[in-house]
Amino acid sequence: MKKLLLLTTGGTIASIEGENGLVPGMNANDLLNYLPGIDLLCEIDGYPLMNLDSTNIQPEHWVDIANAIYERYDDYDGFVITHGTDTMAYTAAAISYMLQHANKPIVLTGSQIPIGFEKTDAKRNILDAIRFACEETGGVYVVFDGRVIQGTRAIKLRTKSYDSFESINFPYVASIYEDSIEYNKPIHMAKNQKPTLDTALCTDVALVKLHPGIQPELFDYLKEHYKGIVIESYGSGGIPFQGRNLLAKLNDLTDCGISVVITTQCLEEGEDIEIYEVGRNVNPNRIIRSRNMNTEAIVPKLMWVLGKTQDPHMVKKLMETPIADDVNF
Ligand code: ASP
Image (cartoon, rainbow, N blue to C red):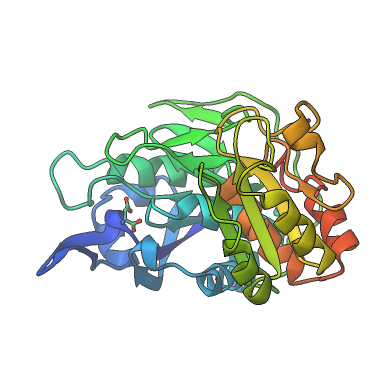
């Protein structure tokens, strides 16, 4: 029988009705009490790590989660992390960078409705996550509404429906049915005994979504306060250079050694700055291409890379190197 660890961090799944709306109020053992008979499936220990609405999760909490898994890695066959859905995609990607080459499953899940409420999706999601964490597989995944998503490819797309998460620009890893788990793609298992733990982060990263009329002076402020900037531009990718000219500001940022990543507000198919003049105007040797990486992966990846080096050439190289299936061409 497999031995798992259930780490709880809060979120709707563990929420109760508070005086001022839903608040996380249950720990790991409370959640396990909702799953009678789970001991027939696996041996499972609970570990209440934190109890936060995931809106309050900060990069430092990603470090706590990665450390908690790493410290207990040898004692368990798999890990389930319950987490709020709002920032779960960021946490899943962050853990994918901090704990690479895991040869055991590390599975994040949550729910749209608290576990103690009628019509909750929590029991199904935890049970699915536990079942997937019992598989002979390795890596970081999100399990939600019967689907398994690569940790670097999940996006919360819906605020209310049970199928809140989608796998963007990447196939679902597997589907979980009542009696079986069906894989959509082969999983490459790491051969090493333990994942590499690397939790150094530089959190001086800003994400800017372009909109018509955005004022270039915003970038003067960013230049003084940030080491990395992710720009969600439009469509295939481009920077306005007529009217309110952002191109000049962008060149200024890269001249000052700030790492600038370009991505797109379009969820699917990624940027390709080589198509239009507005994209080709951007110096491809200075700007960091994200291709079809998701914003929820780009932001933690940039923090993680800047935690290692602030040499702009090295940052560009590492950012453009695929990690944990976060990008494909
Ligand atoms: N606000 C909640 C959270 O992210 C939402 C959820 O878990 O579904 O913690």
